[in-house]
Image (cartoon, rainbow, N blue to C red; front, top):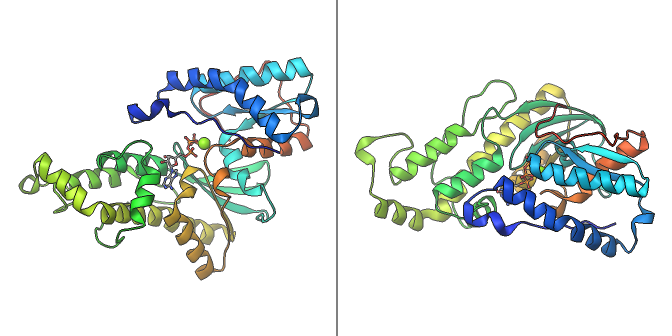
Length: 322
Ligand SMILES: Nc1ncnc2c1ncn2[C@@H]1O[C@H](COP(=O)(O)OP(=O)(O)OP(=O)(O)O)[C@@H](O)[C@H]1O
Ligand SMILES: [Mg+2]
């Protein structure tokens, strides 16, 4: 009924999320966020049937704040408590709204901390069939952006400049990883040397290394084309594996989830690839791609239907099994 988000700008000047600052900001935000969400929904807590919260995975300090708050609310209101797996919730964001995939479907989850291909057989039965062995797709965007001197998080900025550039101007190598797993760390190294060599080579070459002024000028003169070329490579790494997953499973209802699914290059290429291959593709509305409360609510809804409630003794966990 409402989906309210409190962003945290406190991390921007550090170039990444500082866990301790994230927990403190959660402490400050959690009561006002709940009040605002209830006001926007036009109801009070008596209308709520259950309290769903992210139990895992994530930054433990932030998870502790949410878990303690949800437990307190559940105890005080005498309403059931529902523990949600954050990555399953990202997948289930595709079931919000009218245009939904049929089961089984495949979901490419691409976020700040994860890159996974998930085979989803029912709302609560999912299996990770491929994942990154090093960086996540969001990290690949953010770390590339950092090398270009762009502020954190750089993913949306790469997307913005890529729209104005030529994706075929520069070539970054595609890693050869077996099966359905992904790797992005080689791409980062290749971009690092590409910039250190002002575009002359993607690998370490003593004779091409340039000084800082030349490097900055090269970036400035070619920013749009560099961003378009990086984005096109990240997207092709993702979609080539997705294509392989469709071939292996025979499943043709395809979804995407996670913050990187906001990327315009990925959205367009997925739609085109879907049309070419006879897939039905589903892309969640923008506000359900990055972290949001509605995805936790829909995951909570399915658990509510099966009365899958948590005990008040439950603890959060930084890592989570599926
Ligand atoms: N338009 C875009 N293009 C590319 N990347 C984007 C875009 N918009 C957001 N991102 C990236 O999405 C990531 C954030 O996504 P999200 O909020 O889902 O991650 P997270 O919740 O921190 O990670 P996780 O869910 O794995 O714990 C960042 O890396 C950000 O750069
Ligand atoms: Mg997330």
